[in-house]
Length: 98
Image 1: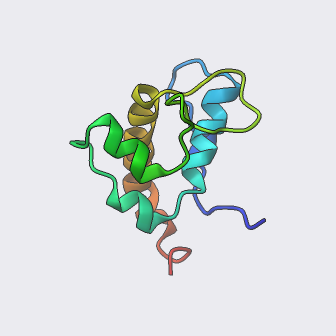
Image 2: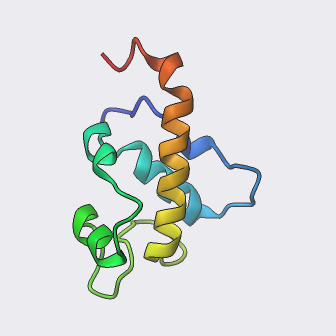
């Protein structure tokens, strides 16, 4: 498996994290740039679930090796952080993005 150029997984933002929060950040590291750019914060929860296509029928993200469930509220908060992270580090990774 090719490692992503992003390293949001290692960003903790000052808040304590557990295995699930690290896994969720790694999930966003592996999300293609093209897909992440399609995300819209104004979408309702159902639109987010349909767009990601990796949520289970119970409304939780299918995230392997996690201690707890990730619901759409947490997903939304962390994807916003992931987007901000990419905006911040993109200039430093310009050569790797080509």
